[in-house]
Amino acid sequence: MLVLAGTPIGRPADASPRLAEELASADVVAAEDTRRLRRLAADLGVVVRGRVVSYFEGNEAQRTPQLLEALQAGERVLLVTDAGMPSVSDPGYRLVAAAVESDLDVTSVPGPSAVLTALAVSGLPVDRFCFEGFLPRKAGERARRLAELAAEPRTMVFFEAPHRTAAALAALAEAFGDDRPGAVCRELTKTHEEVRRGGLAELAAWAADGVRGEVTLVVAGAPPAADGPLDTAGLRAAVAAAEAAGATTKDAVAEVARAAGIRRRDLYDLVHEKGTR
Image (tube, rainbow, N blue to C red; front, top):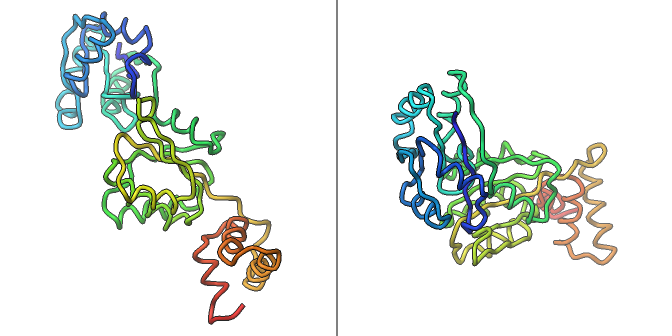
């Protein structure tokens, strides 16, 4: 049987008793980082008696057939990654697919998940969500991916490297609008856990000074479009009405853009087209 084990994303104390049992009883333990596995086992007071092999992105293709042979021979193979659930932006999918194709049993040891933890503490809607993994590193590819997601109505979760967080947030603000609500979840469950909430542009400005630690981004889905399309005159009139009620132009544009389901920058350009309203 192949066992996918969720490991702590921060504190070793978050490990389940069943994880300790599986570590002690598995015939083979495939670990993304064998040194981190040894530290986790020591923290849990567990002696790993089975064979320990590395299983990471660089050797996943080569190692999968070997682990499949162990499974076919009747051995219990435990797969663990550095943190969280295997195969969720971590090694594992290739081995699971091979095991399923060979009609072998696959089960899991439920455990911590940065995706669900970030969703839960973000303060954003969680009734519907999607996980988008890591954004492309190259600016052009990232912009194209985000353009595809601009109208996504579900709350979105992204993983990001700390040194790319500011650029990612700036790209999100460009694609989704400065005021789209988001949350930067840093070092979840760890001593220096921090959750920063606000509009995407505000979060990008905050991150410009640098971000440290493991980062998970949560972004609100696109707001529902207004009933029936608003024409140019209607949009301008709505902005003018908000201004007449005491709102600044900036706040009026943001309010109307949010209600109409369009980007604030696009509405601002429309309202000021040719210097008229």
